Length: 438
Image (tube, one colour):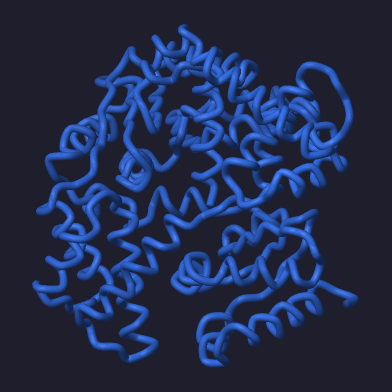
């Protein structure tokens, strides 16, 4: 194989051994390989619908084919058009598009008892930034609409003032960006990017808890924006009081403004979400089927929308009737893809090494300094608890360490978790954030 194109052709040949030719021609016709960097294979698909479908159903097949070819685990990332532009070094319109998109607005957000306060607070902030609730922190489980609301806020602010400077970042990316800025000597530019913003949006802010340098930078950024009358909006999976690794000075600042939660939607709200999504897609869904979906998918808005997308795919591409059998298949596929995610050891290693600011080669290696040992033991524990790898196979990942050494590392982490609640919370947060990356 002389090029990434040759590799992709080989992957497709492997896939044809497990998938039908109809499946390959239907779903993979707009998928192409971009590059392989390290243990990550980058693909491109300009069709967002097909991209989402491939990510939910066929990513495991692609990873397995790459493993068969190279005898190592790969991550696979599928880029849309803005992502491809960004990957190749061009300007990415991704955030700007979302801030002006008709998809992420207050009009398309379905309001119910479980999110009514969050919706009203977000509208107030959008119309009167930095006047009523600053900061606004929206918390709740994944898939309940927190990101939709912060994009809707940005959408209104951008319409009211097209020149407004809006900065959006995920908590995990903020840490990675800071590490890169320190390495490249560009911390001044990074600070200016966030501290000159009229609106700062931080998704999954709980991720910065326990990261001393990131918290230090964010503390000063928060103060600069707050004191100069700029709006800050945060999302989190829990309230600040439950972020045990968060510094007190940040916790108090997060609580200065307004904390609002979003909870799983009730039946009527789920039904309204289903009908809204169907209207957007032009899908005529019988009431009986809509009730059936709302009765069976109860915890996650994203799963509701994914089910409707899957039904639409069956109808458009396979000519399937919209009946209970089709809907059951769609729901099973969605729930299976949500519940069967198993991160690769490489994903866990990468995340832990970034969290502890220790190079992956050091985590895998023989160095015995405190940070290296701490990161290594936590990585071993997480790989053992989150994947199907045996202790012997884990030992091979860490410089051919023997079974007893791996068992000892796991025991050390388990003992410390029992004695130290703060450490146990750190491990819990690492698990949550690794799982949220798929």
